[in-house]
Image 1 (cartoon, rainbow, N blue to C red):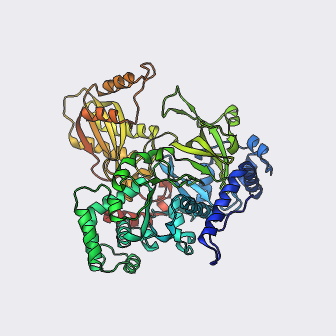
Image 2: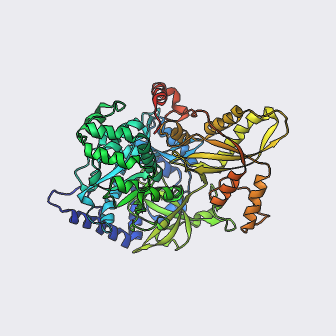
Image 3: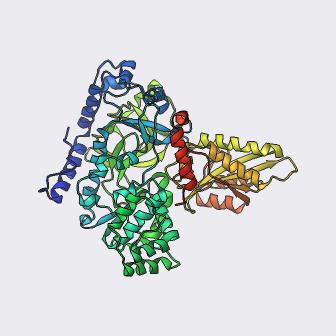
Length: 628
């Protein structure tokens, strides 16, 4: 197996030599990916030969690919949830992995309304760091000189909890930012950010955002690239600036920090950067006072070469507003990763967002691919059974055996104890780098609504609506049809539900009843959604729009006019097509918003009795939270 390049080099190494080593690594692993994959699988199975899960499934110490495929089932989270719970509750025996589980990474996909807990081990931080280290050498082939300035990235940590057994459970990026790999990283011109670590690690979202923006503006001429993890997060930062720029200008003019920034470590870190600069303050004030904010990124940070954000999948809905704010700067998606595993990199980062493809790095995990079959060719209608029969299991193919243009569901076997695990991502083969395939990210399986890191599927939405309509029963009313829409024209974005009512009673329904319906839906949605509403402030209040009777008949007529079959038509539970949204909005007779935030606390519901102190603290923080 090609040796992974070191993430730090002797001081006498030049940047060009470091870049060359990283690019050579990519060439090596993509030139012989099948051999690399065989060795990865063998290594995983050899080191974990005696773990309970492999023994239970009868692998009996075999490390070859043929035995593995014949013996091991293809699974979803529910298949290993009991094992996960044992580990979470303190069982330290080798259940899934021979190495100790160091923490759980909380997936934004949900199980029973709770975040999924993905086991990880200490060495996985090395693999994640390796993938990060490949990004800038690739980027520098297209835009030279990025080592001569800084990156302005809006990076944040999220809340974490402890399982009853004492393991930390937190999002993967929070884990990385809090690790020594990030906090104690050696000097690297490519990880030279405008935001001090203290501002990134500040748990208060307002203070973190404000201080990162302040530092980014103080160093505006040095900024060569800007970004965040998701497009939604970057837009939130720009909208935050629209609201708070007078305070930022005052701080830059006087060299002081606003009194709302109370975290001592943040204040100390910012004061090392902030100096009185009336000229810069005047420039920022002049730009921000203008009615039009088109191109504000290139106006305030004039040397910016590109915007580094994820705009694939559901994040593509933010492309127009990013183009507006950036004056059409390249939107760059650099890598593909999840809580389960880090996967690959974009080797053509300046391509159009619609053409982004990722090359899976074959040393990260063992990859398999389950062919996806569309139902009657209808977009977003994907047939992927929850459990697979023998024939479907045999359909799985290896990394080098995928076919150009075919769609697949990604299945991974990781060093940290996931075996033939269905990630839930749908990918399409777009091309090849040497012998390694490159994939377009198509969608997340079953997801119908998403604003930020939330993912709501059709079944969950259906159950939430079912709970809400109970409020209409005393008025002899019901919801005859509904659909939904992720509205990102507001910041933060929010869910919109269109309801057509069946009214049999004569008593008018008060607005407060519909507001209660909004809140009930939010209370019924998963913990990732509720965290976005309560703690992260990345999702706005849910809205219900009541439409005229006959609206959904009009919707069907429109779909049929576009070629849909009247026999096979069913009301879409989520809409994205602009003309359909315009049709629905043209028939709205009233609208209502959720009157308050739903309940949310860190950790799973079953841990709450063990986390009373933490819960109290979180509720106190939520009470004091300010909108970002």
